[in-house]
Length: 216
Image 1 (spheres, rainbow, N blue to C red):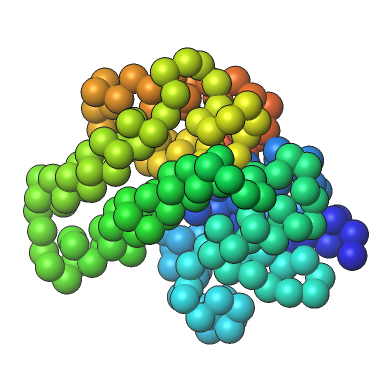
Image 2 (tube, one colour; image 1 turned 180 degrees about the horizontal axis):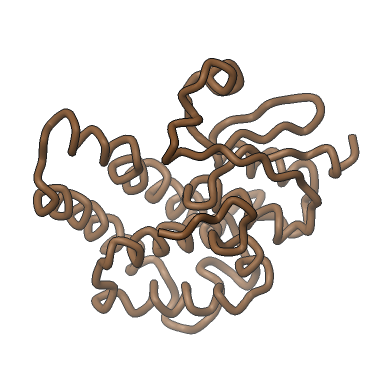
């Protein structure tokens, strides 16, 4: 299989898709963008549901398989193109990378994504203030843990090379900034985010650099 066969169904503002775009850029893999406008509900069409029954982005097609879930996709990319290896093969570095990535992918992001926010507003009829309190509560819970795991020095979150941890942290911080969340209690997180923003792969993967970017 040629890496030029890679197609990514994604939405510029999806943090899960953002993780995968960072991984693709770090590995310098070529891929084709297929936009799925979540705001317009394109993920709910019968055609897209046939591709991903969970009706979420991202989905990666590699010419042979369709893969859903950002962490599963990045694991696939690690096997397709091991350099740089985003999940260390063993040892304490692997454990810490997975701790950070899973804290974000399992404990933080699912509680604040678009479909949860719509349910809070439309079904539970929470006010904007109540919804903001919900969002901020789960940001704080997750960032409190992440801050303690990050190094005091400037650099990557785990070890001396980019990892899955960085692919997950940067989009989650971008979500927080978009929600006007106060990150001042988390200097290590802010320092890591600023460090990553200077790297070309993270710049290429940013929401504003995507062809389906439509602003806020």
